Length: 177
Image (cartoon, rainbow, N blue to C red; front, side, top):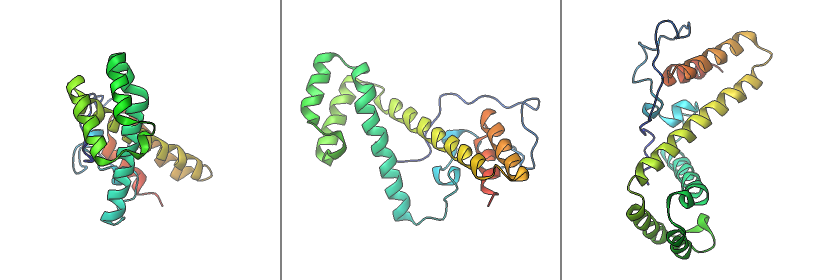
């Protein structure tokens, strides 16, 4: 599984002049693209200052969450019962502590059964990225509940998310201290 934080998204709503939120951050002037898949997870979460080791560890943890969720919730919907039984035999009891070799075998097996496995995993990663950013927005609403100006900025970022302008949303949140 790829730990690249630039996954592709299936759909991003278009932004028109009529639906774009008024802001001091112009989405057309923001460096990079607005789509969620083009955004760096660390920028979205406002933690760009970590060292490479910490970032790598965080990405590994996210990858593990996605992998475990896929094995626990999705794979049984995508394969036949007999194929799922064979998968269970490969995995054993605990999906969280699979060796690298076992994970590779499981991936090879699943790639034979599920031709679009990589796309499914990328989609799961994008949805997790969106969920984490939305959680950030919700926590900032709580944090700034008593500060109308900062709360307005959080609401502005939320509007950018709704219009698909993820980079602008992150830029707005990252200006708040």
